[in-house]
Length: 368
Image 1 (cartoon, rainbow, N blue to C red):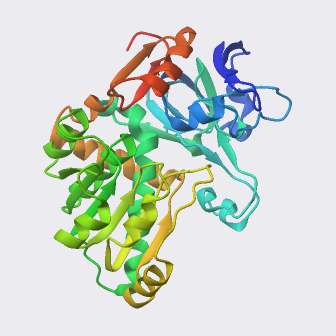
Image 2: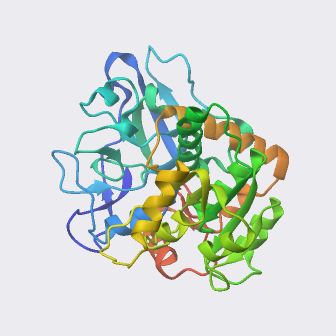
């Protein structure tokens, strides 16, 4: 079978490889699931791996198959798989267990290990291939009504985890009902965060760089949220003029905005960080004031990365509600389609230079 891989450590090394088609007996105890890949979303992580910023090949290989946002259909299941059957549409989770206590109890997204095992990212092959085989424990069924947008489930789980963790942390307050939230960033994660918060009845202001109108701002406003360009007003200044936020979800990839957001947070507020930033930016901040406000105001900062099965399952629920509530809203996030694995270079071209890009994805078999 064909797959798209990189040679970790070598910039711009993406290429097609030929691999044996996997078999369900590669998974122990009859728990294997063979999946035919239909769509794979790509994002900044794939771009950075191809730029050799991080990523490692699985043992025994000198290449890493990329792609962690997979969507496919089950072709075959092992003798002890009863929750899935051929014909089911599915998405597989990304992270695999290490050795910490958190890995052992099924919360491998909270591992304390220094080494991560992540499909398509580090030490495990990903989904940008014609097939993959996986343990049923890590394969989540997608309802038929979500087949057009199932490829969005993995990025949705980043939001699910962040929002859920915010509520979990604030259980300490006995009663915490956030009324106003800000989302920083109007890309895929920012749009999905806006959606999730609106589904919870929260007033949302989403900040992006570009002046409205454009597709992203239109999508935000269709949810009943407000779009604000940071070219017009900074997050902190907006909060000073209009009131601080009970929750802020950051999804910009621009680390300095975090300290601006800290100063826009209300008492008992939670700032959720979802960006992975590998640069070395330095900024000057009012450290004493930020520290004082956080201590006296019981404010919290928490990070969210990857997700375990719990958040994939809750993501399915919110995607389903979104389709019922907002019709084709989710499908409009799928802006840039590339047909066939052989056109993999176009994926990176869109990620680097594409205009009006929200979600770039590959139709692996070219027929969807």
